[in-house]
Image 1 (cartoon, rainbow over the protein chains, first blue to last red):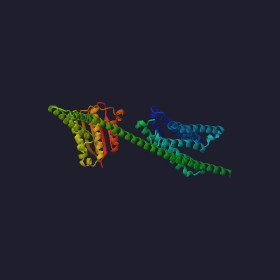
Image 2 (image 1 turned 90 degrees about the vertical axis):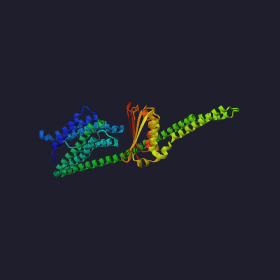
Image 3 (image 1 turned 135 degrees about the vertical axis):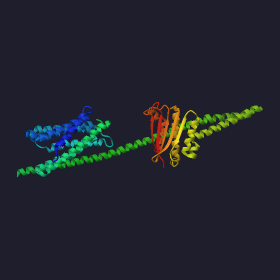
Image 4 (image 1 turned 45 degrees about the horizontal axis):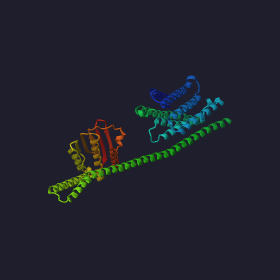
Length: 210
Length: 269
């Protein structure tokens, strides 16, 4: 298994670099920084929860999905620019959050189970927003172009990976666990590569700054 | 038994979600490509429209310049030739006056001879201004040399002309291209004298990787290169149109009180 500690270190380094420019940059940059810092914290806490408190981290995945959905919805609300796209974003945001809260209020036990539906419902809109952002800026310089590509790539692949992981867990096919976990680590490195490149662009091509 | 069923159900559920994710992502992709294609076509159409607008502008400029030129020729003909021929005609009528003295007769004929000579000179000058015969007969280099000689003989400005371009490369230019370049230079010199109050002008031609580079420099007043009024004036837009017609690339470097520099790169056949 690839060592996930290096992944955390890379992620922490990335967060630090983004945080340096936090106050100098605009809203989109701030939201993005909060998102990557939040993801790092949730991931780190999640992976150490059992070691620290002997608690299984199932409910962390809900935090992760919801946090990602909320933050990235805000992120794309600053990037998307046509009225219809923003309307879709806001309506999805309200409807989905109300649907999920009602679901957990009616049956709180669901919060302690993996939920395929939730992870599907929270990532799919983000994938659509990312695609919209790509579409809006066809043939132009897009703000946060590489961060968007990184997100799109990771969300695309990790959704499948997560669903596969579920299937593997259900079928108890242990030999596949490691492969999936390793693939996930590689995917994350690729995602961070995009984020690092985005930061380089923000700092060295100041007219792209956002 | 029920446990196995439940497990199977869960597996089915997971498979179902994988399928759902597959289908929805595929759908996103297809929609993305569909709309992208539409948008790319739209962008292409916009680009073409801009091109057409540009061409329209060039056409409009050409017509405007043509009108200006006609006005100028009309004025030249009127001022320099018609007026003189008028007086010649008057004088010829005077010749019909009975009992003219020899002296008067001499004066009148002298007058007629002088005026006709002037009218002739002027008509030659006007024709020469319209299309220098040297340019047509001996090519661009000789044409520029003559232009420079004329400017220098006016004593108001010193023009230096350096030509290091290969003879074949200049000769291979079509007559049309040579005329465009000549006109551009005429316009530039005109501007330098009229607006720039330049005292010294340098013109150079050189080869530049299968192309010819024309450099024009004056020590005049210059102008703010961001000033759109200057750039869209008839003279400058005339130059821009000619540059477009010969498929050249031009650049202007100028600042107030720091002279004016023009660079033109164009290909030879």
